[in-house]
Length: 108
Image (cartoon, rainbow, N blue to C red; front, side, top):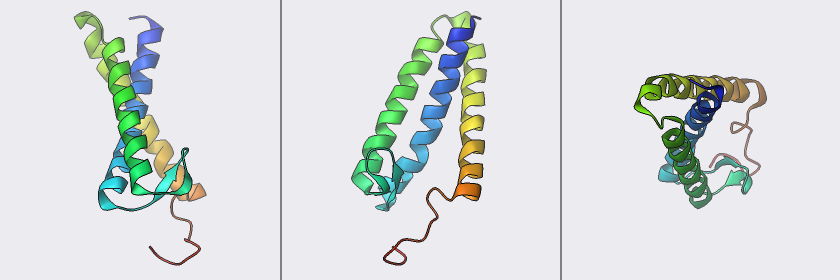
């Protein structure tokens, strides 16, 4: 399999994995950091960001796994993208506190 589809599938995994915390935050009616509205992005913005990430990830995965002979390798690359994003998210939260910084008005 060429390198391009593997990178595309890994990017799809990153986008799909990133969609989950934003969609869960939106469903819970909480705030969370997004590039659209900053640290205190409301639930509606998180829903939009999560849905956009999910849709983009699914479109990229569809493009990456075009031929059935390449689908298995693309799924592996997708999984690597999910694991890479998850590790980055855990370490980023742990070291940088993306979303765990105290809210200026106290707990939500």
